[in-house]
Length: 168
Image (cartoon, rainbow, N blue to C red; front, side, top):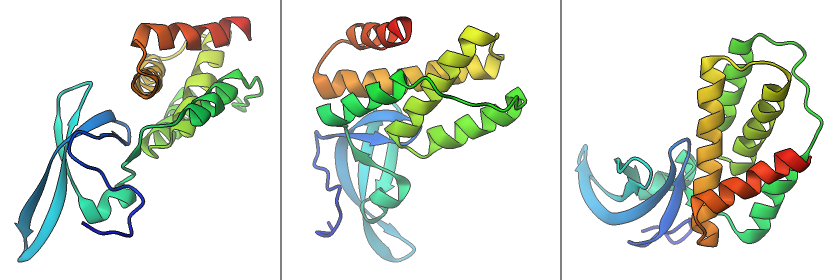
């Protein structure tokens, strides 16, 4: 493994894979690819049980990262509490593409913005089917990661997030 990478994972570690959510590192395997020997993280996505292989040397490039800390959780809650959002009357499909781009970045902060914006939008108008699914996806990604980071149940985290929107 490379020593200069920020995110070195061991078997048993939890990691976050962009747009898929929290995964467990279930193995580190060596494979020959086009005559080159490479190490791969073997990840099991906790939500879907899907297995993904990520080259160790490309882990940062694909956005594989550590589970967030308590300080980062508080920053997420601050983003969710923000009231100012602007949509400039975009069509739903343009908004949808913008939200999808944010989710694909793998940044929990971008996902929190999507959750906040869709939740606020939902109070003003009916969401399209795609936007409702995206709201569920964003909520699920955030809830699962916070639940694992805090070792709480997903229901407790979901209730805490819902409370932010109801009191705000």
